[in-house]
Structure formats: structure tokens, C-alpha cells
Length: 433
Image (cartoon, rainbow, N blue to C red; front, top):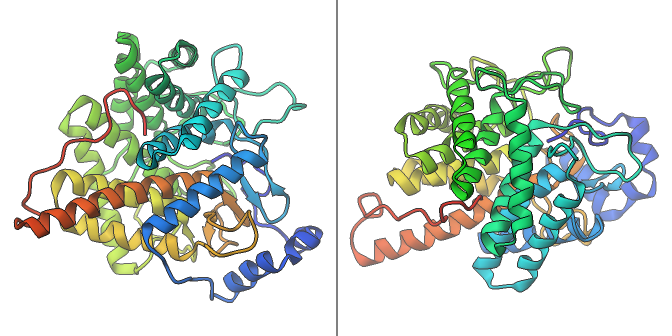
């Protein structure tokens, strides 16, 4: 999510594109560029299982290209494979554990553990996690609230899986740092190296990490801090489902409107808070925004990448990461409510992301990857296949497959899935993901 990634917050100029030289001239990359520029970049989709497998293999390559421990921020058409990214490696850890359990493949357990170990090694002395990508020779890294929360999610899951105390201790140190920098009203107001704004509603996803930490430790202060932030974030929602304080920038032609990525972050944080705390007010927050987004998809036939406070958008691109996240939120709502509208909308949005994937490309940075924007030159992380986009697509496809299998069983057994029993939550308490 960091705008410190090379080329992430700004489109490549023609000169920059040319300077990429032979990399961009690779036939597979040229095909992506020309197809997207010409509006011919949609591909035939395969089964969700095939797309999931290709996405997870791309994430494995992203880890290998970053040294085999942390996961690369992504593949840039300008700069090639980018350095490892602590923030997104943190929340990729639960995805690998989920896939490992799904497939029984030991490789994914081992990879997730290596990610968690690497995160311990690069943790700052304060307990915080740095903003931006990790570079060995970089100047003193600066801490970031959101990044710290996402790595806590990874450590909590690693501890739940391995019972190794070092992961829980790292999560405690990080959680204690979050407590020390939280404002009295529950918000986090700390200047970050990644954004122009210093307070963010999407930090509710960090509140979720403190709830997970509370589940594992029983430390009341984590629960209290999480609830303070949830209450602050709840007050940022407008009657139309819009969230204030949810963009990276406030001025100029930068990212001054919330992307669907950050909008989905807020819904995810509240959805997980509802799961862990069972307070209906948090679910109502999610439903208010989810309903609005579902109506937008019905009217526009695709999800624009960014929206203003009236849910208007002039964007001609879609943020594929946000699409996958929103689909995942809708699928979890369907799991709870059995309202088929959410299932139908989620399947459409997942299909949109799948159709933007290249499953047969000869280029390892492209095959199975997820672009920041569709088309690739859009405003969100232009010309980069991002590791967090792949993470969220994998999460969404795993939920989709589980629910569709269940849906089919219920239909075949007689009662309609809409009126059938609501399945229990598959994620054990204390596990992130």
C-alpha cells in the first residue's frame, strides 16, 4: 500500500517507460502493455481453483525473488522485482497458512514460517514495523502504525500455528508500541513515511490486530485500545456509507481520494471486529458501505478505482486489489446472511479480477500476478503487479470455493441455500486471516 514504492504514486512518463529498455520489450510484457492500452486485456477465465493455484505460485516467486523470506512488494515493469515489503508480508502469512491447510502442502507452512521469522528480524527496536520496503542500506527506517498492525496479524497466526513464543513476544512488543502512540480519542495520529495524511480510518484494520492479540494474551489494554479506535472509526462513517479520513493524500493530483482498497480495509476491520466481539453495530457499518458498493456495481457494471464523498467517480480504471477485497467482504456477508445478492456480486467481481490475470504468460512476473490497476496504466500502482493484490485475490477465491461447494451441497440435498442453516465461522478464535 506504500506510496514509497518505485513508481507507485505516479504514472510512468514516456521517458521512464523507454528507460526500462529490454525489460519492457520482453514479448510477454509488451503484450500486457499493448493489450491494456488498446483495451483488449480481458482474458478467458478458468476455474477459481486454477486462478487460486496460479496466484499462490506467483506469491511464492515473489518470496523467492526477495531472498526467500520476506515477500517482494511486486513486479514492476520499470524496475523488475521489488524488495521485500514488511507490511504486506505480514498479512500474507495468514493466506499461506490458509492455503497450506487447504492443500496439505508442507511448502506453504514452511514459507509462512520463514516470513514470520524474517519479520522478527526486521522489527524495529521500539517494537514497531517500518514503513515502505526493506532495504539493507537504507537510512534509519521510520515506524508506521498500519504496517505494524498488519505484521501483528501475521505473528498472531504464526504463533497459533507453531506455538513458538518468539512470534507472540514480537506481537506483544508491536502491540505495546501501538498503545504508546495512540491518541486519547482512539485514533492514531503519527506522521508516516508513506502518506501525506496522518490519521486514517483504515487503521481500524490495525484495531483488528489488537483484538487478535487480546484473544491470544488476555491483555485487557489491547482490547480497550482496539475498541477506542473502532469507536473513532465508526464516527467517520457518513449516512451514505462513506468514510472520512480514508485517503493517502489531501492535495494536488496525488492519491487524494480513497481507493476501493482503503474503503475495503475499513470494511474488513469492522467485519473482523464483529466476528471477534459479536457486536451488531460493527456489522451495520459494514452493511451500509457494502450495500452502496453493490448498487454501484449493478449500475456501472464494473467497480471504479476511487470515489468521492458522494460516491461519484470519473476513474476509468479499476483497483484490482480493492475489487478482490470487496468480493471477500461480500462473500462473508453471504456466509452470515444467506442473501444471494452478495454471492452474485462477489462472483462477478472475482471474475473481473480473474479476467485481468495472465495464467499462461511466459514471464514469471506476470503469470498469475495481479496488477495494481486494470488497465495497468491506471492511477493505483501503475505498471506494477502487487503482492497484496495477489494476497487478497487468493483469500477471496478460497472463501468463494468453500461457499460454492457448500451451496452446491445444500441445493442437492433439498433446502435452498438462502434459507439453509448458516455455517459456523471456519477461522478459529485467535487466528488472523
